[in-house]
Image (tube, rainbow, N blue to C red):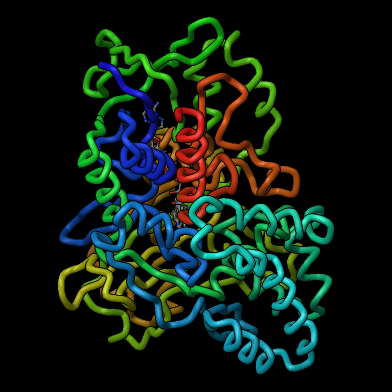
Length: 506
Ligand SMILES: Cc1cc2nc3c(=O)[nH]c(=O)nc-3n(C[C@H](O)[C@H](O)[C@H](O)COP(=O)(O)OP(=O)(O)OC[C@H]3O[C@@H](n4cnc5c(N)ncnc54)[C@H](O)[C@@H]3O)c2cc1C
């Protein structure tokens, strides 16, 4: 088989790279070990409920969001429906305060001032500051944005570096505010980026918040797999090949340069490997997996040296629910609710709480029934609980112990959810648990992370590994590279990789 580019992994980064390259006439082969594409951007169906493995909400889609250009170019809008979440950004509750932060900047400022009038000045300054981080995008003419898709982020990151490049989200919140509950509320969705406010890069925190307050949040009708499936169909329509149930086992080298991939069907991993020779290989699979499992020791040295001391991002534990009712029938009004325990008084408590007792651990609940999600039969709904978790607490457990621990967690969180939404426990038709170990098994991402390398000061934004690797003809497109984890970032990463390759393959 002759192809221009082989891509290992059909997560969002790999799919976007493959789609753009295929559109521009390159012959693409995508190799995915799972039976379905998407990586974390996929769903499964149980008892008539469609459960989204990953996506809670996608930020952005405001006028100058670079995703808009990408989606237009890849025909996404013709095939995928985005449901605007109208219930606000998220509700934050911790026993002392309980309110919903709206998703429009002006409304958010107003509500925060109502809640914390003594912090008025700081709130306005804080919102101005995070806004500055993205204002540079407005200077780029829209019709030129195509070439500069990643360009908007470059000035953002550079301009922010003198002031915030060496600071954490915790430093930033401490600078503007005295009230600890206000800081806790603003860092409420930290699990999307990091596990510790004093490690999370202030630049990443600002960009993410700003994007949410500009474009609000959206869910993909029918689940994130609709986007992944569309990209697969797009690649195939343009002459590309997408092989699910096939696992890449080795990169092939010729005089120190990557020249192909070996892969096997996952139905028979002992069969003779199939070889494909290519000009370029793109790894959407995690960089640590590539380094430790796919590259021979000598050839991989440069890359290994680069990543060996890098810190891997955190993982999450998820409970997936199917309910026999819409939760609005039980009086529930919010799409996303962040629940902190009363024992978390200040930012310093956040990190230990994220790995502490499950009865007090911070969690986030998403009620997909608050939008027309298309995930459940009429009158029913789905939801998910998400919290930061540690793979070490699961990895070494025997089967029985593993199952027992999962059941204990289900029991704890049904009680906690029932406190949040009284009587919900009588409406649960389906519940399952995905641990960090489950996530690692499905994606080969070390520690089960979905955000790649931790987004700390030294590993965030421009300091991340770029699409071009130190090994000739090997490229990356994933959460592990610039700009980072999450849907928006991996979509940008996939796009940037394709643009780099189109320049190289001209
Ligand atoms: C519970 C949860 C909730 C989330 N919620 C949100 C959200 O609300 N908003 C948001 O923006 N982001 C969210 N994310 C994060 C987002 O889903 C991820 O950051 C993003 O999807 C990662 O994409 P990726 O391209 O890096 O690849 P991944 O999704 O990590 O996929 C990598 C792919 O490579 C394949 N692979 C690995 N090794 C091989 C091999 N040897 N051969 C062949 N294939 C291989 C894997 O099977 C996998 O399909 C969430 C994640 C999780 C887990």
